[in-house]
Length: 140
Image (cartoon, rainbow, N blue to C red):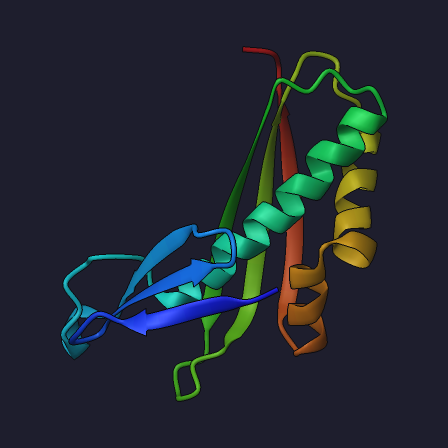
């Protein structure tokens, strides 16, 4: 795995992966940012959300759950001093599908948190407290 990051002036950067996909990044307004992209720490949360969502969808599909949609909402608390690392992260799953088994959802979340999601496991090993919750909403 490799990515390249190029400076775009001021506090703007563009990341590109080996497949050519690009992600713009920008710093905070107080440092000269102009809202031209996500902040790097937001991208970490986005990656965490994608990693855990992928696992939960895969596990629920393999267990033949009638999954229609899944959304992940993540809230994080950072340290107030530099380095402003994540201290706490709350991950909330909204699972959509009539007849989805809550026990299977909990099992999928446990598996992503404890075994499969590299991002989550890496952050927890780094001292971040991560909590999970979910709700099931009947079909669309």
